[in-house]
Amino acid sequence: MKKEKTIRNNRSAGHSFERQIVNELKDLGFSDVVTSRAESRNMDNNGVDIFGKTFKYFIQCKNSKSIVKYYDLIGKFEKLKETVKSLDKPLIIFHRKTYKANTRFVTEGDFVLMRKKDFYNLLKNGKDI
Picture (cartoon, one colour):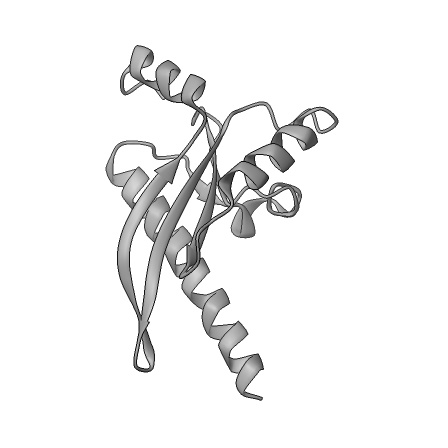
């Protein structure tokens, strides 16, 4: 029973982090971003947590105490892009790094990971991401 509760709590923390990122992006003016859980099972199944019609990136959120293997996530996503036509945007990973303090998890920091070429495109295009 304890393991089931831990999984449920981890899943809830992950969903909460996704919703927080969506709200922050909307506050920045990206009004059409949504969670894939709410809008598209296909996107969710392909590793996309957040997307929008006019938003030029796909986002995957990770909320964990361990190091995210971002190169595996981006590599898997790029391999999927070869066969799934709807995956036509670069992937950005949002990682909330946590640590356990007694019985609760504390945020150590929030990080964003992406391919360098995508970062350079973002810099060239300014807010028009």
